Length: 182
Image (cartoon, rainbow, N blue to C red; front, side, top):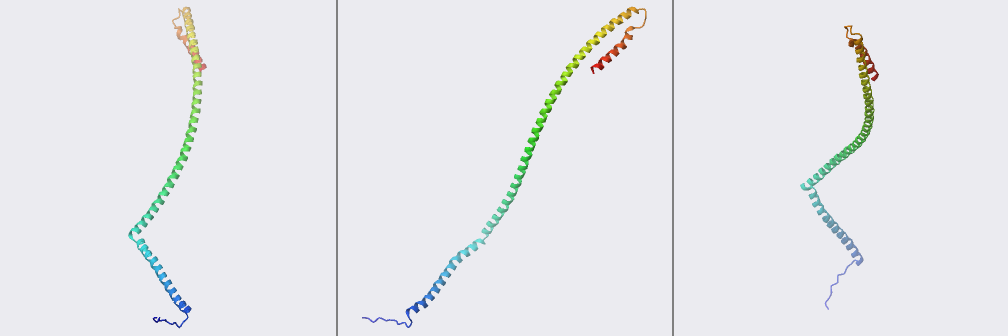
């Protein structure tokens, strides 16, 4: 048999493992920490580079501009909606006013028709009175003519025209009748 070379350790095995284990553990933790830093650091560097790129800055500016425009449009929309509500309120008020005016106009029309009917009745009455008065005047004129003819027969010797003397009473009679009609 071949001789086997045994290394003799002057320290107990537990201590060796303990010392080596602490060193190895620290080494593994250090390597893992470095690996985590590298693995997280590289994408972080790429992200920072991309975030500071011109395209990203343009995009950020575009987003801010869109937000500003959106805010302005929302303000204009709110103002337009207020104007619309005000216009609706005015339209309701106008419609109510129109309805009230139409009702008032209908009442005025009815009152006007009633007044017209009253006036037509009064006109009819006055026309009858006028016809009666005209008939009375015509009757009185005939009587006057007859009286004038009688006076002319009795006063045929007198050169004075009796029709002229009879006209003033006829005129007074006509004035009296017209005053009655009014």
